[in-house]
Image (cartoon, rainbow, N blue to C red; front, side, top):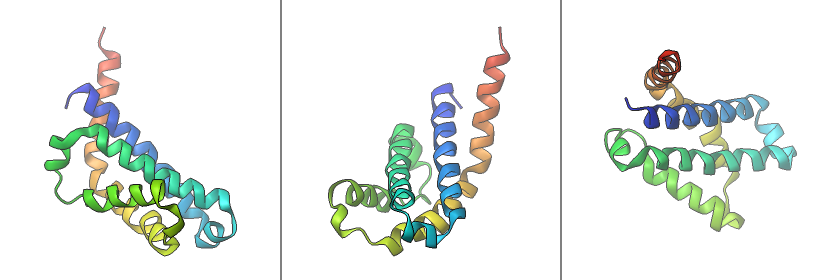
Length: 122
């Protein structure tokens, strides 16, 4: 794994970790606190950007990632936000992002090791 890909995977890990933290606040917090709902929406936009940085070749090697759905959600949040379905946003935050994080945990661990190893090299 090259350093650039490793770095982008670490960014993706940070985004998915933040989404998990928002999910732990619960649906009630999402519904009651506009800051929580906006943070969830922002992190889904950030998730798309993180995946885009990894590039089309990386995405092609991960056909299990529902790239078109993720990108479509990002477009809806960014451009057609009046039609956002909070149930869908919450399902992504609570379940789908967690599933993606688990699916990539080995690759993320390798990325962290790669970057840590490079820091050790004089």
